[in-house]
Length: 447
Ligand SMILES: *[C@@H]1O[C@H](CO)[C@@H](O)[C@H](O)[C@H]1NC(C)=O
Ligand SMILES: *[C@@H]1O[C@H](CO)[C@@H](O)[C@H](O)[C@H]1NC(C)=O
Ligand SMILES: *[C@@H]1O[C@H](CO)[C@@H](O)[C@H](O)[C@H]1NC(C)=O
Ligand SMILES: *[C@@H]1O[C@H](CO)[C@@H](O)[C@H](O)[C@H]1NC(C)=O
Image (cartoon, rainbow, N blue to C red):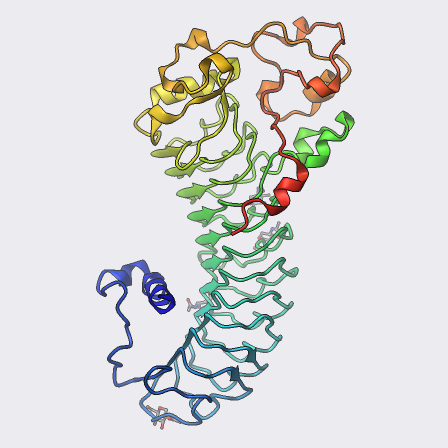
């Protein structure tokens, strides 16, 4: 079963290759004459062979008994261009393991038990174009691990247990176009971790960060990724306000705490697809999608959105698909703050996936009703909200949201009687998230 999964994945790595080969088939069943395939079930090996015939350019190890790749293991095989270790129980890869492989273009170690990799593991591989280190229990990426891989185009580190990345880890990868960090345990990314990726010709085209534990996206994180076409951020813990924002209202500064900062995507003018599903996004600042001129597909399902800013989708002239509800929706609060979304869905129902299932969570008398089916005069805000003057000014000053006040309560009409206590949280800011308990975030959404 595992083996089949591995091959499925391998075949699909380059989507265009999938068409000519049958899914699930073992591509090395009948090796080509330039391939040497070792297989645990057939011609098992415990060590990497010392030599290969001169015409062999690809060496593939599938579920063999090899547990270590020693320094210089391939030193007498300088003609190899491709080496794959698939599903071997490899625990050790020594520094210099791939020395002498000047022609190597493609290296994969997947389904191993690597845990740690030493600096120097991938030294002297000037022509490496693809490096895949998938599903190998890697828990630490040392600074300098990818130094010198100046021709690397694709780097896959998905399905490991990496908690963080060192500063500058990708800085020397001048040719990187594809970076997969999905399904790790990354909680934090340095703001400039992608910014030095040189922009000689194209720059990064695809970035996968889904299924990590990211809570915050630094405002500068995506700044230099002008060529990015695909960004996957789903299944993280991104939320608008960190939990401590509820400890005291004087710390409530929406602009500095917003974890999807206004304009974070501003330079992603090539992006076609943006997946933000399965996060804890409770609000989106008005300008969050500014710059995404080419965006076709936006996925926002399974978040905590209850309202949306006016004009939030205005910077998306080419949007073809908006997904607000797939597995789970968002807890929409059908009041005056939903007018923008309501009219947007009515005007663009062909773009909204399952548009008739985008439904209200609150208020109680509208719960379960499809937003699209409501009349505009049903979207009302109770005029009786008694906001406390003591914190309204700070909210108005710092909110990036246009919903600082509901439309029924223009600022000059704010009642001055400050009877409301904080615990009743009756301030009319519908972009404020209903915060899950801080402890819940720690064990949620881990895959
Ligand atoms: C490498 O390839 C060349 C040309 O095909 C061949 O002459 C040479 O013997 C090969 N070297 C080894 C060590 O196999
Ligand atoms: C890597 O980048 C250099 C400089 O831009 C370029 O000459 C080279 O062809 C690229 N290599 C690959 C494999 O794309
Ligand atoms: C973005 O790239 C440019 C040129 O490659 C560089 O000068 C600049 O420092 C980078 N921006 C950031 C925020 O690092
Ligand atoms: C967009 O990129 C340019 C050039 O790299 C940079 O100078 C600018 O600060 C970026 N804009 C934002 C808002 O990050």
